[in-house]
Length: 194
Image (cartoon, rainbow, N blue to C red; front, side):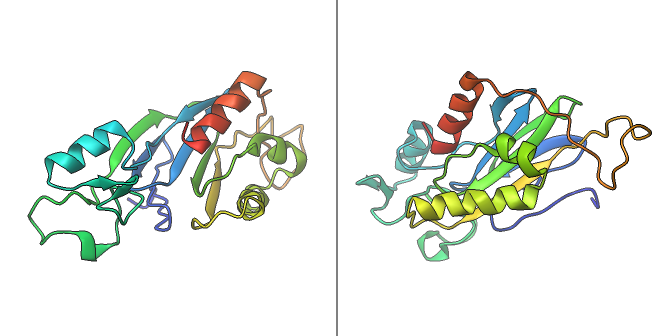
């Protein structure tokens, strides 16, 4: 499995032939294909009806939007003090939801964020073509919003070289498409959890 890219801070491993996202918690993964945002993860919040139902069926409670009145997520790798002994069913679990799409030449990038921030990565990539800078700018946006959540952001570019003979460059350039206003609103909505 040398082709796997792991990032433990967001708990979203992904492969290169396919984009596979395994999510446990409130990190968000959104892929962009030909200017259209594709939601790759579902936040595991107590207010999400399927999670609320699962929690209540296992004897947990939702108080003021929190699992057992304490935790803002219903799935997490940590928070061991809230989990029952190994082998027993617990309202708090580390079992992820898994989604996969096959990558095509139309796939532009994958955003993985563990924060409450609105992202317009595409504009920034066109400005400077630097995924690291985009991730930093996402975190800075969250800081400006004075979020108290953790601030993790990763931008994974699915690059497609543009005719290598005609473009003298050390890095392959991204194939860029226009992001419509509707796609921007959809991406913003997905990242905000609406």
